[in-house]
Length: 152
Image 1 (cartoon, rainbow, N blue to C red):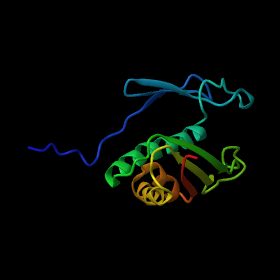
Image 2 (spheres, rainbow, N blue to C red; image 1 turned 30 degrees about the vertical axis):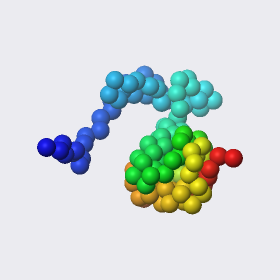
Image 3 (cartoon, rainbow, N blue to C red; image 1 turned 60 degrees about the horizontal axis):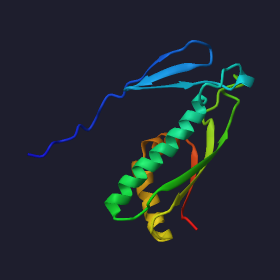
Image 4 (cartoon, rainbow, N blue to C red; image 1 turned 180 degrees about the horizontal axis):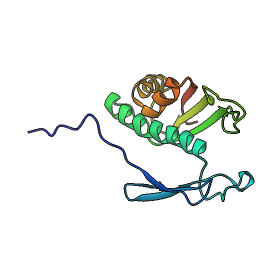
């Protein structure tokens, strides 16, 4: 008898916030800090909340990219992923409410596997369909420009 996976699960996280800028996050058996840099009154104990969101997109692209590659039979080997984000700071500085703070993200994904440029184009389209963080950003109005490329 096949085991059927749940279609919806509850994600949980808790935090102790010892200062105005630092949140000590606990997820499963992991603990990490989200903090602001010293020049903004933090202790630089971890990435900022906005840096963490961008890092989550990179991590999700890696995980979903490998799942989609396996499904498509594409060898992507390991990925190197970089992201550049145009971020409208007027909201976090309380200057004014901003509907789309992450205005544009450029995501460059480099595969060291044997996948061709055409394979990576097909793969990118699949990842866009299934990556929850990509969907979260694009649903909020962020323009995501992706470059999927084989390593030199």
